[in-house]
Amino acid sequence: MIRVIFISAVIVNLSCLAQCYKILTVFPMAAPSHYILGEAIARGLAEAGHDVTMVSPFEMKNPPKNGKFRDILLTGFIEEHKNHTVMNLFQMEHMNMITHNLALNFLGSTSTRKTLDHPNLQKLINSGEKFDAVIIEQFLNEGLKPLAEHFNAHLILFSTIGPNIWVDGFVGNPSPPSYIPDWTVAYPIPMNLYQRAWNLIIKTVSYANLHLLFYPDQKRIAEEFLPKGLNFNNALYNVSLVLCNSHESTNQAVPMVPNMVQIGGFHIKTPKKLPQEFQDFMDSAKEGVVYFSLGSNIVPSMMGEEKKTAILKAFGKLKQKVLWKWNEDTIHGKPDNVKLAKWFPQQDLLAHPNMKLFVTHGGLLSTLETIYHGIPVLSLPVFADQRMNAARAQEAGYGLFMPFSEITEQRLDEALKKLLNDPKYRENAERRSSYFRDRPIKPMDLATYWVEYVIRHKGAEHLRIAGTKLPWYQYYSVDSIALILLVLISPYFLLKFVLSLRKKTTKSKKE
Image 1 (tube, one colour):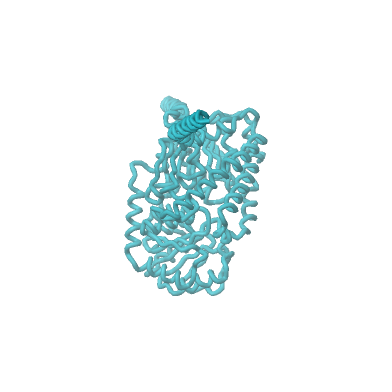
Image 2 (image 1 turned 120 degrees about the vertical axis):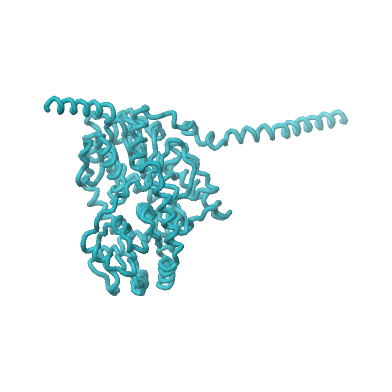
């Protein structure tokens, strides 16, 4: 018996030597929605048998047993994030393009500086440890990318919102402004001439901001806190793989280079039995349930009284029951059919057969989850990518789009009735759900495969396109166009010069 156990242990250890990798994941944002994604990646890789270290403000509950896992906590980040939530995010809806870029620059620089300066991360940096891969959430933190070089690891990026201007350039992924709207706008597909023109301006301004202001600042921060000798410029583009939290069923179909992989929905879990309080509420809803949540970052009680009253009155007219994620214990004027709570098991609620409609801010996680479960949506976007997600839902026919600032009792009442009474929205949501679920491999298994692939093949440089090595004027053929114009124009000026000489010669002879 002891001999059998010994042989089994040897086999397991040999298997681990061949297949187990040391992986560092860095998700420094203190927002719960960001951690949900980071935790899912770290847990999935650990369950696949790898040795995973996660740098994050949150501590993982019930760490996986299959592989090794440890947290490196960015202590103090959660408390600071909660203090910042006193900012009224509803006011960001009408922020102009320049102010938006500058605000993101400040957020990114502050976050990167605090992350690199944190004593727990500095301890890891100076520990002498090495990793096979470093996975970093691509979110305004370019100064973290040299960590991969420091740890002698392959750099893998995780894009929270799929392909976009923040990540495309690092792998040379094309994003023509003629048919791919910027992630901050709610333009339809296809765009009209006016929208295409503005889209070009928005992308050009964003590109200039990144290269002229943001990246240089991130470089200064990296050089201040990381060991000397790391090449920031090389680290930016030394990307082996990009994992995109997107899928064609929810996002626009766009071109993707070979080392970009879509894993949207990888965080979605098998539905569990609801807590008894919610189970009874859902089971007893003969006409169904409407679920309303503005996500984890927006403080709902900060909405104006006018909007709050309009929402309450519109919900009070429904024959359906309503679950409303609300950050206070009560709300004045609450109708009898509305139940408030500070937290809901969202994925499990959406899986219940009595769920009829999801009224959402349009966050990507909520969008992915509602599509997975085939539930129509009424999107009330406030900021960031929410407008884009809302526009795609309306175009695909499984939802309606109403900017939060445009809410009135009448408009909300009409939208709710339309979504609840017209079966086409539910049919379209279920059709999208079938697209979303119909994959050859589970998204987390796909992510695990490609992470292992990159490590096995020493960075998988054969997947990288040549465009990443070209300066912008070569990538966009500016120098080639200039040469062609020079060749085409030169004969004209040469002929003009010859004729002018001839004219002067003729004139001198006459004199």
